[in-house]
Every structure is written in C-alpha cells, then in structure tokens.
Length: 395
Image 1 (cartoon, helix red, strand yellow):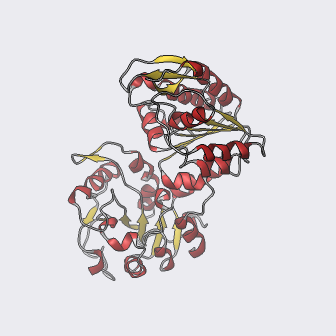
Image 2: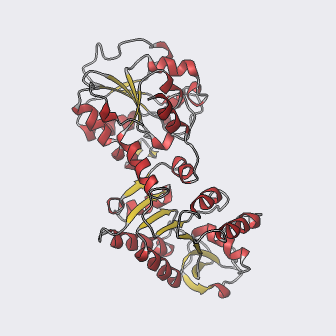
C-alpha cells in the first residue's frame, strides 16, 4: 500500500476520511475517548496540509435506520474541542446531496456526516451508494483499521471510485501486528484471556508455529483445566469444546511452542465474594475460578522477562471486582517494567484489556494498543481483511 504522505497536493483537496469513532456514550457523554484520541494524528496532518476533510464514521448498530440516540453529535463536539476547530455536522440525506460542493458556503474546512450506518446501503456494501459518496471528494483515506474486516460501502467499494490511501493509524496498526505475527523478534509470548476458547481457536492455531509460548488465562483456561480432569466448580466454561482443545494439543506437538495454563487460581463463591487461593486439586464444587493464583503469576512474569515480544489479548480474571484483578494488573506491571528497559516490544488489544490499561493509566507504556476488536483478532488469525485488500487493489 502507498503511504498518504506520497500524495503531494493535499491543499484544498477534498478528502473523504473513514474513521472509527464508535465510542461508548452514556446520557450524551462519551465514557471512553481512546478511539477519538487515536485519530488526532491524521486530523492534525490534514489540517496542516490545508485539506478539506469529510469525515465518515458510525456509532452502534442502528441497522439502516435513523436513531437519534446514536447520533455523532457528541463526538463531533468532542473532536472540535480537541482540535480547536469548528466542524460542520450534516444530517441531510446523503443520497440527495451527491455532486454538490459541500464546502462552497461553509467557513468550516471539516465536515462530519451523520452516522453512516443510518443507511442500509452501508452494510449492504451498495455500489451506487459508494459511488455517490465518492462523488463528494477527490481522494479517499481509510484510517479505520477496526472497521476493515467489514465488507461495507465506505470501507471496500468506495476504493473503486477514488484514489485510495491508508491513514496514519491504519498503517501503525498493521506495522504493530506484523511485528507480532511475521516480523517477530523472539522469544515471543502470547497471553490470551477471555471467556470463549472457540472464538480464539483460529488465532491460537495460527500463532503456534510462530510463537514460543502461548499462555491461556481467564474463562478460556477453565475449559483446558476441565479437559485435564481438574474440578472447576461453578466456573464459566463452554460446552462441547473438548475436540477444540484436543486440536490445540495436537498442533502443539508439531512445533516448539509451549502452552501454559494456570497452576493455581483465585476463587470465590460468587462475583462479589472475598478471594481465596486454591491449588488445582483443591477447588470446591460451590466455587468459581475468578483469577489466576500467585504461582501462575510468577510463571507468567518469568516468561515475560525472558521474552522480546509480547502480545496480550484478554484479562486473566474478573476485573470488574478489584479483588479478582490482581493477575491482570501483575501481567500489566511486568510488561511495563520490561518495556522500560527497551528490551521488549509489547502489543495489547481487546476491549476489556484496554479498559484495564486505562484504569491503570498504562496505555502509553505499551508500544501499541489496538482498539480494533474484531479486525485485530481476524488479522491475528491470518485472515485477509476486506478493507486492507481493497486498498491494496485500488491504490
């Protein structure tokens, strides 16, 4: 893919900019600004180059219908404050303003279209809708890596009608993921949490040939413990995933990759109970596994200290209760301490992981933190993302 900086004549160029500003909003207030903060570099670059910017984004899943509660107005106002720039919000029907010079009567040089998913044509990847969008601009920039696993009109088909470029954040995301999938400095360790091992099986199988260590924690680990005939009490687990875990262990036999799962755990009788440490043979029928224990934390920290690359996706415990967040916090601290010596490249992703790092004010201590969600996971699985493929085909 070409770099946006290869485009030499941005002054007064109408730029159609696809962003992912799908941030949580409660009672009209944004509760997590991470995704907004990440698009500031591309906005400042385009402002500096005197481009005219048309922003396309979405919030939530309105399913092709106008929903005032999913308006981008609070995000537009937040971005205005961050950029110290007035932004014009257009709520008119996009299908009725094609081929119009949007900036002709405006003092603002940044336009914000209302939620693109208010149009059913967006998720249907409608070619005519893409053509109409393209008629409003001179070039297209995709700086929404987190939407690039979607085959949507403003992500893929749009590239057929305009010169198309990856944005600053999208390039950073790909470069970071390449460093933990292909251009790896070893030893490399993956720490993977979350509740469902079935949704991560593709990633695990894709990483086994590349990684030295794969650490399974969180609810996913309960399935492995159950497979190994340990009692897990009332702990969360998936049903009928024995064959999935068997596939993982069979795959491990083919490569020099170690699978690490908890040696001890923290339990409670419910999510609000006080924590108790248990060896695996001591878990009672009325207890739930809610975090990793001290022996497991020590083992994981040892692996981090020996690694030169770490990928972390998913917490180790039930972090909503601070009593069961110690494992995740200790993993974060260990990665941060090793990173301070400039001897570790660290990438983190996943909504729960990011929420924890935000609480710890530790985002800046990681080399890269991905907000991409599904696209992040699909890239790790080795899948071709439609939005990235479209950029490669139409630059």
